[in-house]
Length: 228
Ligand SMILES: NC(=O)c1ccc[n+]([C@@H]2O[C@H](COP(=O)([O-])OP(=O)(O)OC[C@H]3O[C@@H](n4cnc5c(N)ncnc54)[C@H](OP(=O)(O)O)[C@@H]3O)[C@@H](O)[C@H]2O)c1
Image (cartoon, rainbow, N blue to C red; front, side):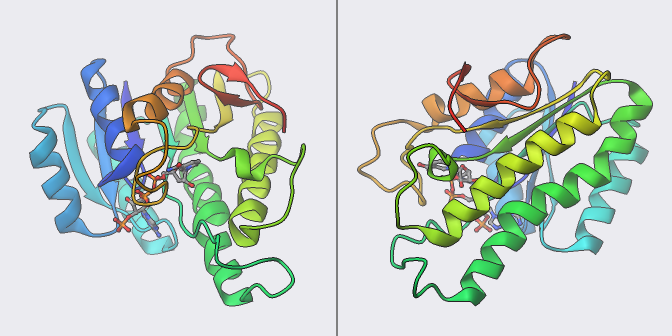
């Protein structure tokens, strides 16, 4: 299988690349900073992983990686929309800086949307695809309170995107789901988080490698359905 991971240079994305390659897949580790991506690939030291620059907010960058994948492999089987920003614990909805909200949306919602639009045609052509939108329990409507307004609104919207795309792709073998990795020790999650990157990545890799007839349009953590 050919897999592409966004934000693959550190954190959960890096671990997803490692796990997918270990499972035998060809991985395109993408990062907005080309040098950091190459460094990550060197560190992972697995011949099945290559790097490619990709900024999920930039249409030209997306078109370049799309063309690269199409020309080099002719297919994309797995797309992991992992890149995410702004866990904005410092503000509330009443006073949120809307520029930050816009920037968050651009990366966390429009990024996965752009990537999905870029690669679904290739997946349709090959009759196969797995798309994982890395979401968060912070975007679950059920029991949602205040805080992290930009982040929570963006992840709730990302969940809606998973539902909408899954409906569009009904009847195909292209499965698309939202996955929450749990609270994970990364730059975003902080040192106090209870889960390792490996624990966070497991559920993402599970959704990225679902068998035919597996779930689509759902929200999962550790391979188990969770409330929207
Ligand atoms: N950690 C947690 O506890 C937790 C919990 C729930 C959900 N999540 C979700 O899991 C995903 C990964 O989180 P993480 O904890 O691994 O975060 P992280 O350590 O902060 O890493 C974020 C990654 O996203 C990349 N990125 C940001 N903007 C980008 C852009 N415009 N284009 C391409 N890449 C971009 C970063 O690249 P740079 O290195 O260039 O900045 C970095 O590789 C996110 O979607 C996050 O919302 C995390």
